[in-house]
Image (cartoon, rainbow, N blue to C red):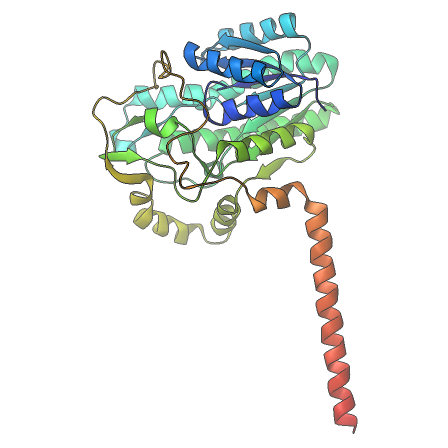
Length: 341
């Protein structure tokens, strides 16, 4: 599946940056979309160092004309777009009552409409060719809202509904264009050091935390296997979604008790920290893919492996069930024989 033209939004840092590297390592050509010039330059160097061709394009995904222009440039300079990955986002860490309407709008425009804009720009080309894959980088928060991230949770919920609606339309039309969504756990990305925050302490992802390469592996796999409607990454994602489906009210109360403290490190927030809501935080500084939680982050996910190998897991489960059934039948026979004596 290598040798494709891939577009990644939010490519200057975090999951987008790690995904760009992963695609490049396979020999793909990567168009990198983000606002920050320094981060984009670093991402382009990563891609080239791994043997790929890079096209960095400064783009604010909240502006559809910029996204449309970036897509046209990628098509012109790199060739037909095979894969489009929507990942760009921003956030505000605060209680809903402390978020200004303008801030909420900005998060929605980037973190939700940015995905809509990227999808629409990609479809303008993919539908004509009747091929291509769009990967939406989602989150467990697409199903389960948590405190202090109302704008982000709302955006991820919106992407979930939007993607499902679009997928139904493509299936109805018999299109060979595929859309899939990857639901992520907490990931060690630079965002926790640069999003706008009104928390008294440094923000952190809700543990357990995974390295961005785990997320990138899932993105690349989804691009290769878009027939599945979505993938879950991390045991925490699977457990959260299962608990929310079975007992959402109990989860409400649990998060009311734990959801505030679990998103703070216990360290005081610096008063002059970066803020990327309106302007990129990586102008002059390349933050890379990783945040500051490497010492606590997991470098692999067994649940992701299971999500990628449903057939193997199902076969193992069936084998275990048959073995259990055989053991039970043998036990019953042995018991009946003893009673027959």
